[in-house]
Length: 626
Image (cartoon, rainbow, N blue to C red; front, side, top):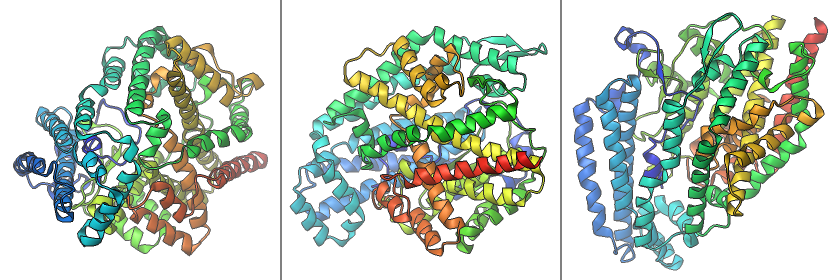
């Protein structure tokens, strides 16, 4: 079925781009032309209409109580219950999306903050009321469920959900226990919430003086801003001060992360899994071998990664590469800008390999106001795509500033939007929602198509060099850095499972060991200063329950698929369109295999390494020609 209400409380945003929570500067929203703003009237005509729909859903969820204890009586009763749950889930998602997007337009408006809080409470109520459904279905024998499916044709749209539920039968408890577990969600978010408040609002971040006298306040946003400054001494001080401050609170931050991992372990035991990894991956039936294979592939290809690091050192003219050099500019920043209309043309041309129908849908996004384009005062920063409003269309939030990176962001979010659009168009609501495991494939595919299209259009060697280096850095951060995080996350969960105390010092020790291996510290490829051991405390994704590995797997899958599409393989294009149309109609690993990317094997990773080496080869050719 569609996402559980617990997940819907996160508003089902089907993109996890990097964005910060602080207010984005810009013009007043009223000063931006309407054509560059999204049209939320497609969702609800007015706030009053939203409230009316909210009241309707709030009242109707109580109707689901009448099916408690009745689901095994007949196929008709089971169908009625699931259809009502599905209908209300769909409307709940619509309500949540509207409230969230209204708030994101101007985060200073308390009215929409209150609407989000109301939705959160409604989600908790919905989850609690429906907590009996899965355990009750699990009491029905598989034979009887099969008979129900034969008797009621309309039950077929729930068949994948029912069969998947039976697959997970041993991990569910009785109805009373499931209700307790559902209510525990009110407390289980504690470690993550405290970490967020502490690191975003209360942490005593340092202020340093740069070589030119400028004062730099190093909170998370300041660190991101100053870590790539050209002056090497400044970079060193930025890293040393920022991570040194985090290290000073390693005991508190370690206790929070330990609590999070213990929460994961609690649910692992409650759900009768052998490991936290198995539990996290089993929701989508992902074999644990996929996770382990990713780490193994990275270990086997560290030489390729070290080639990039050595190339970076040479391009920067350094004797020794240090960790604080990894974000520094290698080449001059591209002095180019693109008006929004120019960006649209670039994107449509780049997406040519995916066919005319795909491009026409992207045109709809541009022309029919699916996109909120420019920064404005109070607007949420960053970018995302929301594809969770089944009966309407996806929406995209941008903060477009005309740089090439902004063009890349648009095409990335359009990848998510098209994935949602095609899934919603081709699937009934219960199977329309694709798994997080494949969520970054379509977006990354689009970025790769844009890179190759743009690179082939360049004639200036410096622009080519800059474009190639940026592309390589994307591979470093998405494939190697995220897998480094994934290995750390696996390691600390295994420690808790084995009764090892997870202190700040132990976390430092574990993280330092992994990062030194990845970056070739002992081989003098990239030297890791002592204070980097506290970098784990900066990464909020460790509170997301084995999330980060999916960035890497999605990237390798997208690379494998894109190489086939760019080669002009029409069958590969057809398979890709079927992939983005499949939604959640099958397990994501199977959907990807059908599309041509088997993540249980090494081929997607090997193709990614081919792409990485090809990129470095181009850089070497340009350097030799200069």
